[in-house]
Length: 200
Ligand SMILES: [Zn+2]
Image (tube, rainbow, N blue to C red; front, side, top):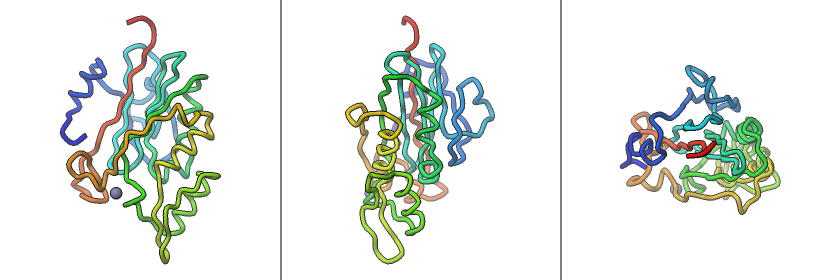
């Protein structure tokens, strides 16, 4: 949210810090304790009191938790990450047998226009789900949220265990940052999740 600070989020999660990495639009997943200075797009937190987070402005923020272990993952899934398989990489590293997921606000199919080549690559990574909302000439509108949901399903997370925090980042200038709308001056939104390990 544009009107919330990192401090607000830390307070809500009851943590003093959120582990983050240098995001590079790839499919590398790492453990939180390896995150300092690392390049990755998925971070897994296992220790009590650990929070992991990623920053987005149009890309899809994805948070995972294993209800049995209380361990968590934060995943940055732009189209390049989706094509590279970052959702599976993050879910695989997290492991766990009872995963729940939350997909946050991202650029919607109303606004996410890409070249047909990119649309085809996202579609191939999301089969059998249909993620191309419409095509016109050499451009297409793609539903990235739906692509991430398809990859979650492929990773074994059932539809009824996936929550959507709705909203199109480009459309909603009041609530969300958007790189496509604001370019280089765009801010980023932090999505974070904390472990629930041991007794509190
Ligand atoms: Zn939109």
